[in-house]
Every structure is written in C-alpha cells, then in structure tokens.
Length: 305
Image (tube, rainbow, N blue to C red; front, side, top):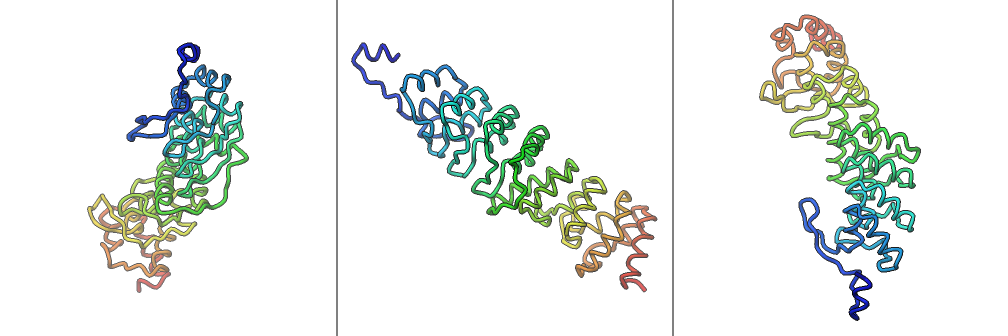
C-alpha cells in the first residue's frame, strides 16, 4: 500500500485515528497501532515500526490506553513481546490508572499475565486503589492468583482507594470467602478492605460465611480478625434481619465457635432481644449441643441467672 500511494503521489495518513467499538462502548482516538495490537496482527505492527510509518508506541486513545493496553486486554502475548522489544512502556497507566497487567488480569488471560510479569510489569494500584491481584481475587481465577502471588514484585502493603475501589475489594473478599481461601482474605484485608464491609446487599462477610456454611476456619479467621457479630444483616433463610450469632445457632457445624460468637456479641453490647431469641432458635433447630454452649457462655457473661 505504501508503494502504491507513493506511485500515485499520495501521502498516506498513517497516524489517522478513528472510533472503534470495544466491549460495550465506542472508543475514539484509536490508531493503526491500537487496532493491530488488539487484533494480534504482528506482521502489521512490524511493517509500521520497521519502516518508520508509525513510531509512537505511547499513542493514546480517549481512555489514555496505549497499544500495549490493547494487546493485554485481548491477551496477545506475541504483540506484547514485540512492543516491549521496540521500547514500549509495559507499565503505562490509562486514565483510570490501570496498567496492561490490570487489563490482562481482568480479561483472565493467564499467558499474557505471565508474559507481562516476565517482561517486568510492576504491581501498581489503579486510581481506585486496587492492585492487579485484587482484580484476580475478584474473578477467582486461581491460576492467575498463583502467578501474581509467586512474583516477588507483588506488594503486600495497603493501598488507598475510593468507594469504587472499596467495592471492588469487597467483591474480591466475597469471592475469597466463597472459595474458603483464607490467605486471600488476609491479603485483601491488608490491602485496605475492612472486614465489616458490605459484600453484597445488606450482607457482611461474617454473616455471609455462616449463611453459606463456609468452613469453620474461615468463620474463625473472620472472628479473630475483628469482624463484628452484632451487626444486623439480611438473613434470606427467614426473610428478615438477623445477626451472625443468630444464624450460627441454627447451624450445628459452628457449635465450636458459639462461645466466641456469644462473647463478642455481648462485648459489642448486642441486643439479644432485637431478633428472635437465640435460645429459641437453638431449640427449634434441634441443636442441643449449641443450646448448651449458648447457656453456659451466657451464664459466664452474666446474661443468665
């Protein structure tokens, strides 16, 4: 095409931009490098770069994303390596502060994630305060989580985020609890996610773990790390608000934790009369062992004569 244009005395506009639909939105400011990177057209990129037709590897679309972002978004490893070899910045940040590593993780492209790590991608927080590993915890992709955790550059320090970032971390915490992945819960908490964040409508982590009958060790970890027992949450099993203590009494698998749950409930000045009496719940549930644990602990705490 270049030879044809020259023969005709035409001057090609190689750096011309256009608007392309990506996902659910139209993205403007897209040039030929973005398109070739997103479509895995290595030969086109080599033509543009080797002949000097397009040289700005940091060209940005209206989301401030570079060709490297587009390659990562669609998981094109060969393109990532080509662009890096030509000097592209694999740690460039978009308008939302996302790096190519964020996009590869979000798209669950394991090979691209591994390649970016190999090429030296840094673990940086986006504008919402979320590191790429938070995105991984949110998707629940164990292979990508393992790849990120194995990288020595993966930070274990808290990040500062906004409400949107907190929601993303809350979603990641919910996924980690659901998979009974305590190490992930620990890291998400360290990254700045409180354990009394709403992880779904009217639902806190401790209540979620109990109602979904997750492992005793997950519930124990939440208790040991400060989750409140007395916060009213929506109990879908009874279509009413309840607390983690009331929910646990109805589930014998958590009997071993009842002394700790009752103790925390009392220490938090929880109101035993604010919902159905847990003693009644234990009786109605046929949880005789739990009833004994309840009575004994309430007596120790001075709540029963």
